[in-house]
Structures are given as structure tokens and as C-alpha cells.
Image 1 (spheres, one colour):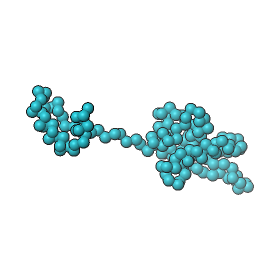
Image 2: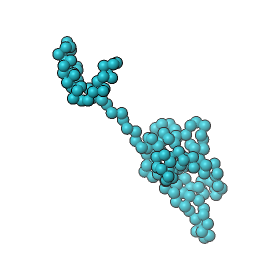
Image 3: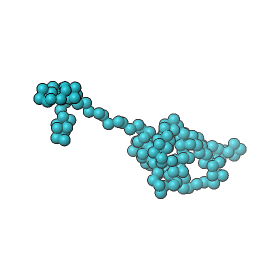
Length: 150
């Protein structure tokens, strides 16, 4: 184990030199002593990091529902029969707050879904918001499904 730590501290040229000197001392074939090349850790995609940040725990049913609404398609007027849903609003704000470290001050939901405010054609009063997923939001949805979070 100490040998591995020693080799990990050496740069590539030093490792090759050390292995060439050791190859004369061993009875094994020189190809067994292949040069050490550290394997870089695989980088997580941004969608995977976001999915891990916002994945709901089993007790967070409203977050699960909010994520489904944001990442699939949601019309805040038609899907609730015109009644406001304060629980959904709170769940949306928690998701947005969880994503703030990645995007600074901007709203994280805007990265996951496009929001379009709808108004009554006759009176001009606010009717609701339609959420449609962005391409990045679709990647996050795929990652959440792969994690069995949704």
C-alpha cells in the first residue's frame, strides 16, 4: 500500500524511470510493470448535480409533485381548476432556493422550465402560469428518473 502512495506522489517521468530500474530486479516480464497512469475521476454532468441537489426525500411528497409539474408540463390554472395551490407555490420556492448555489441570484426554476404568464382575454386579469421544460430541464428529468427519484 505504501508503494502505491509513493508512486502517486511522483510525476510521470519519475514513475517511468523507477519502473525501468525495477524491471531489472524482478523476474516478471517487463510488460507486467506497465507505466502508472492515474485514472481521472469521472466528472458529473451538470444535470446530474442538479438532480442530486433537488431530488426529493421519501417524505417530501410536495417537492416530488412540484418537480413533476415543472419538468413535465404544468398549467397553474387548468391543472388546479382555477384554484390557487399555496403548497405548490412553497414547493416551487424550495426548489428555487436549493438551486441558488449553482446560479447565484437567478431563479433556478428558469433553468428547468420556461414560464409563460397567461391572462384572461376579455378582462386582462392574470389567470395562471404555464411551465414547459427547457432542454436542460429534460436532462434533469432523465437523471431524476435514472436515480428513481420520480
